[in-house]
Length: 109
Image: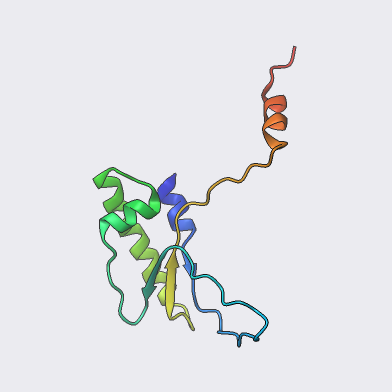
């Protein structure tokens, strides 16, 4: 499942750069691994394992292989100069949601 989340989260970084106005602060750099389409570099297994939150050598190897195939496909698209690999999203829960979830899971009598 984590592998699918990593592959589903392959984001393309080809949006045109916008001129920043003096009032706006620069955007924070994205968390993830940026792969340049002109000179792709294979990320280390340690880096992929940390990004995908995996600890099994075989799973990390397979995840890296699948991610790089997706990167190659993304780089074939017109206008794409780099691809951003991001890890699985963390679920966000508000203070009220756990009670609603518990109520929905309660067995009906």
